[in-house]
Structure formats: C-alpha cells, structure tokens
View 1: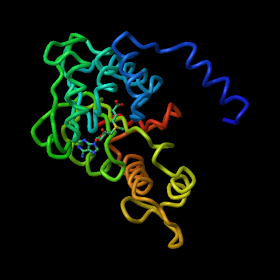
View 2: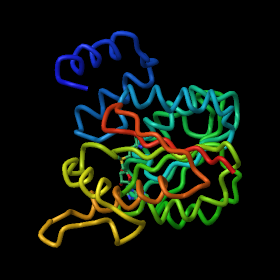
View 3: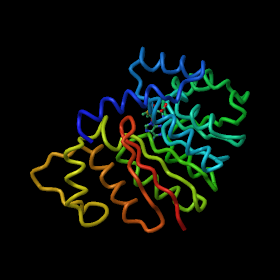
View 4: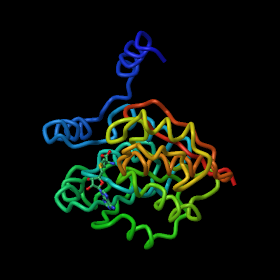
Length: 232
Ligand SMILES: C[S@@+](CC[C@H](N)C(=O)[O-])C[C@H]1O[C@@H](n2cnc3c(N)ncnc32)[C@H](O)[C@@H]1O
C-alpha cells in the first residue's frame, strides 16, 4: 500500500469504527495520559470481531496492562471468561477497577493473574478459543509452545506489535524474506545488530508460518497483528 492510499484508508478505518464504550474511552484517556502502549482501537475491534467469530468463551492474555485489550475481547463474547496476566501490580489493580472487579462488567468473568504470564499459563488447561500475545516479543515463540496443545481446533492466536512499535520493520522483513528455517536460522547477516524484540518477533512469525497446524495472516492494523488459526 503506498502513502496515498494509506492515509485515507487509516481515516476510513477510524471513521467507520469500531467505537469505544464509555469504559473504554476512560481507559484510552488514561493510556494517552500515561503513555501506556495498548493494542489501540482498531486492533481492539479485530479482537472483538475474532471473539465473535470464534464464539469465544475461554480467552487467555499474555500481557494485559490495565485491561484495555481484555475489554475488547469481552465485548465480542457471550459469556465465558478472560484470563488477564500482568507483572505490574498497579496496572492489574487498575484493570480490576476498569473492568469492575469480580462483577462481570461485560457479562463475562475476568480472572486477574498477577506475575509472570509464562508461569500463569501452566495453571490453565484450556481448551482456549483465543489467545493474545502482547507481553515481550522474545517470549512470543515460547508462549506459543506453552499454549499450542491447549488451543482447540479452530482456536486463534493473535500476536500484537509484529510490524511496528518495538520492532525494526526493515530487519524483520529482511530476516523473514531470507530465512530458511525456524529458531536461530533466520538468515541473519552477521553484521546486523538486531534487537531482541525484532529477533523474537521474527522467530515467532517464522514458527507460525512453518507450523502446519496453523494458518497465519498479518493484518496491517495499528502496530500489526499476526492472526493464526489452529487448523488441526
Ligand atoms: C503492551 S502492554 C499490554 C497491553 C494490553 N494487552 C492492552 O492492549 O491493553 C504489555 C504488558 O505486558 C506486561 N508483561 C511483560 N512481560 C510479562 C510477563 N512475562 N508476564 C506478565 N506480564 C508481562 C508488561 O508489564 C506490560 O504491562
């Protein structure tokens, strides 16, 4: 997409929606004031759409912040639960406030897991309908390994920040174009000084594109969402 179509398309996306409910408007206001990196409204709309299409009732988030992405999942669900995980206790406390604590603000149950998402996932057996990766790029591939067998067939994994934000898009694309296999074999030139976030995202995208159990598409929404559906 060139620049001339990109900007009108962005405006069109914003004009058509999705729009925030009152709770989400307050959340985004807080994010802007605090400089906190949420998925953003358009990506949020994708999360809601996927929850709706998947008939999601069991959702797990790696990296929940103060609950913005969880609110979008919840808006696409007809009951069920969203499990939030967060290192930062202050963010998690805010999530409880914004999402109404144990009273299900959106008609779903929210479970608030404090601490490392990589440990929390082992306390849940699934089957999950939807999983969000939004914690650290370097941990996306290990997180996928932990949830792979807990995803139901037709279940969806969404990875945020795969095209922008903390990643270096030039290096990312070059690695994926040149890469011949998963893991450390991503065709890196020895002279590249690739940061761990970019390398982690590249390893993750290489993993899902080569795993026959998944069909993956990168959506150019907000900072880039990789959507992978479990097909067997
Ligand atoms: C990009 S923010 C999440 C935003 C959230 N998904 C949203 O859209 O509202 C990433 C969050 O993940 C948390 N985090 C990073 N690594 C984590 C881990 N291993 N376990 C739990 N939380 C983690 C960070 O503290 C940060 O608040």
